[in-house]
Image (spheres, rainbow, N blue to C red):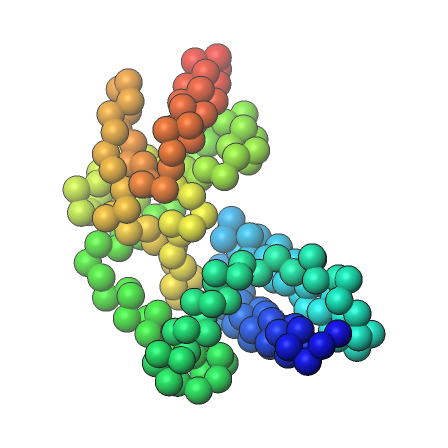
Length: 207
């Protein structure tokens, strides 16, 4: 293994460790257990911890055959490094600390609305569990969304702060479907919406 490849692996390991530790801090102190986001983060942390072990083994054994298992996106790495260079914060760890602190400012946005889980038909819930789609409703009517209207979103739309779950209304679009009003995330494709319509309304009509 040449010096460049060795340093590249060590850099990837450092970044993965720092991000994994930050996620663990969020899971342990900033997120409610037994939620979808909690489960997704736990799975992500486990996957990254396995990658860290593999990288350590590759470094220690002076082998490069194991590079293919590294799943961190190269573009993400470049963005982190370029952002750190541009801001001149110092280490990647300090950059992540700064991003975490500034993350709290995000919750001053007027467009964030608090959400809660829906009490869904068991068959609908099972069907949704096979997709990357989630259904919820607002805690109370606000920002033009009524309490009887439903929100269809993806896990990347979910924002968690102080044990509460939010979505940004700017990322939602209102759709009347039948007699129901749905607010659907802009990250949902037409295929996602068709899939949801099929499973939700077919099951509802077959109760």
